[in-house]
Amino acid sequence: MIKSYILIAAAWFLYKAVCSTVLPSDIVKCHFGDSPCIIKSINDVIRRYPKGIPEIGLPPLDATEMEDVSMLDSPYRGPIWLTFHMRDNVIKGFNNATVTHIEGFNRDPTIEPIMIKARIPRLVHEATYDMQEHSLYAQDQDHTGISQQ
Ligand SMILES: *[C@@H]1O[C@H](CO)[C@@H](O)[C@H](O)[C@H]1NC(C)=O
Image 1 (cartoon, helix red, strand yellow):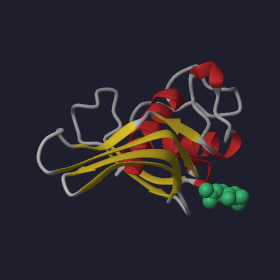
Image 2 (tube, helix red, strand yellow):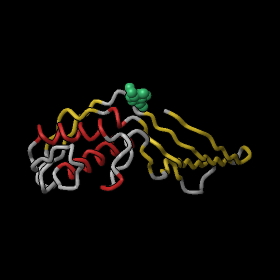
Image 3 (cartoon, helix red, strand yellow):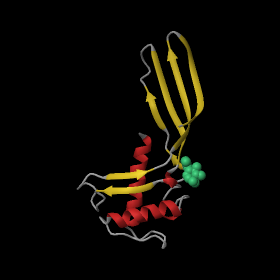
Image 4 (cartoon, rainbow, N blue to C red):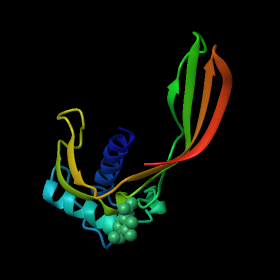
């Protein structure tokens, strides 16, 4: 779920970038709505700049850092509760993505729903998690660990 949100955000960002003048000169600039051109330029950016383009705010695509996420933050009540937070989130693999189809990427994004299709051979989500467990029937427990999926 997190991964698909990131994909949409990344595609939107790249779309804005390829329709603007801030791109490096080796990437063809496109007009809003010119899908074939936009798809090609987005894929060119992904291939040629896996480390991102800091000048225009494009983050690294081979290891994209994410904000902390609270997966479970149940209210501290009831006999059993659990909290689950993930930090140091890094998603790896956007550098290998290929955008195959986009729709609705107009100047005004409210006109049409946005659709994007991409092939991504493998996405790896690495994070450090903290879990806190409370139960009336056992001792409270804190866990910290590394998650990789
Ligand atoms: C992306 O592709 C490169 C080159 O083929 C490979 O080394 C890397 O492991 C791939 N990334 C992921 C997350 O699979």
